[in-house]
Image (cartoon, rainbow, N blue to C red; front, side):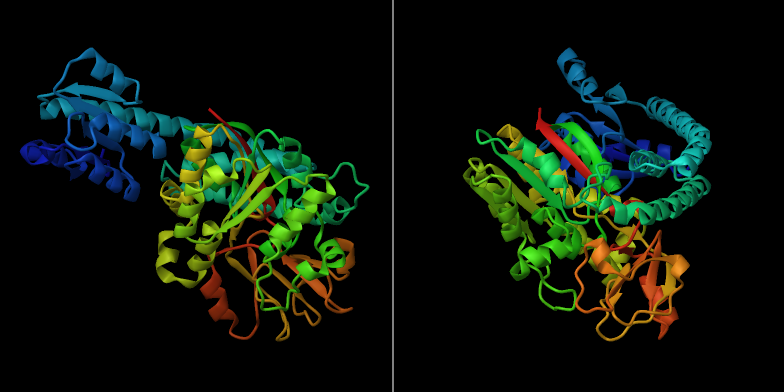
Length: 518
């Protein structure tokens, strides 16, 4: 039971010092709080194994504290401690997902016995999870080898995501390493699959193509539009499927998940291309041809997504939707709060599009800001920061408001991102774009064609060309581009950062979720 972290919450915690010392002598690490608000802050910032929670405290009561714990850490073991033996209080506590219940005054051995029971049960659960993954490992490996449909890859990615989230709780480096190796192998095969099929998917006559960026809204969202009731389309820029899965338990308190699937991002899996295609219902070269005033070239220093609202308006009109709609891009907390305050103004619109850019900003900040690198050091930490942001975000407030108003919601993204760690060399001129996962230009070279997906004729990929010799080159798996000049410096600087634009399950398989209010 060494390394077991306990949070003891009691407004008379100073009087319990002998109990705390007793448990510390038994090998537990004890942290204390004397009110519910302090406890909630500590739980958000730390990973505790068990919480000992006083039921009767001034301010936020034990039951209220427990309710909030269940909203963002439903798997955390909580032992309720109370002076009262009233049946109602016991029922409230037991109905709020506690793991044990103790009546004051408690003695140290009583608490020790409860903790032993909880820890042993958790250890048994962890062992069972390890056994389950080990049993599934071979089955998953065979599934990866045999996958030849996009539905196969969606299923594989869902399973790998499930194990990624579950096994992080066990904190076993060996088993996590095995899972990472399996994810790496899956991404290698997925990249080959994507490269083999991608150009064929783009052909309009291909009836077997998967849902793609430019077909998603027409096929999945437009059928939901109803003049009698508004729909909210929430696009979280750069949201990965694993990030959605850790947000789902929080959102599930307010919405029922009607559909939880994925669609395929077009290439490049970057905002300039994927999100413009999403809102235009067209591929990039088609946008440039039909709406040249709304397309910004790769070489331009202007904002490349400044005309999304105009493209979406044209999209709606092409399919006969002339009703009022609203489009908003949330770039900061103040704007987000105003949006939530004004929610009632938008309820008569046929559709409301809201874009949240936090995760994309976090991804870029993690590359450039050392402290963010430390806070989001790996996928588990990246997910944790996503949850912390969401719990205090205007997005969460908006969702709660929409649930109250009985409004259906779609949550999706334009693309995801992958943590890169393998630099590969490429040569470009001064006009070559800066993205690490794809390069576009007329003088690209120095790369191994076997390591990348090369498109020398952008027309076939419905990508716009600024000149006749434009080439697109995409990284696969967890690779990233680095120039030969100062190669080692840039390779080390960008290693283990989250990037997008290339081909991987994390970037190209994008969550699409329909939510119905409870």
